[in-house]
Length: 216
Image (cartoon, rainbow, N blue to C red; front, top):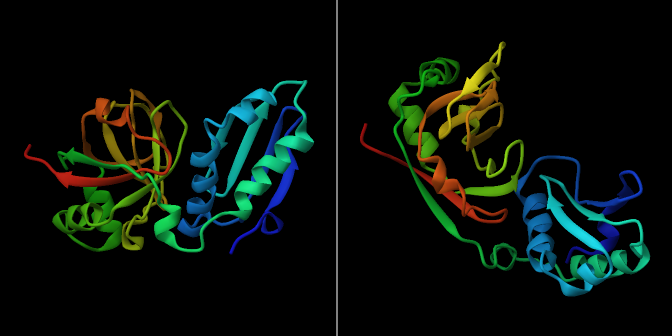
């Protein structure tokens, strides 16, 4: 069973303490990070100790706190939770919510992704809609879900020249990652299609996402 001894703890400045669960983007590390995040995000003792926010990333959990925080006690609370991480994946996925996002796959880069993978656009759609993706974290923009589970054959380099304005609701691939733009913003990911950006508002780290092909 994982324990606090299997994590690396380090400060980022004097108001953020991080727990690293590995150095590679992989589902096993993210599931452990997300388990601790979900257990402690509303923990009253951490709030009393001065912790203002817990933020998960692919491989680490960050605790942000004020200057009066007792980091020794905070570390003890979080280490205790880490020591209780379940060994089975079902336990790690406790309280996960499944979100289904209908996508109109008419994006301007779908042929680029198909060409890179040496498959048809229809096969890109089939492979992109097949997995149930894990929401590893929310970042870049509010409500932007970073998703784990992309078919390795769909891994596609980012654009050489990022767009100055990617439309809200764009479903895209950037390298080994796939996600959805919640609002119009610059971006260099390959656009596969469009979904409704308001569907992202209820998605939280640790949830899962399934893409479904919608009618154009």
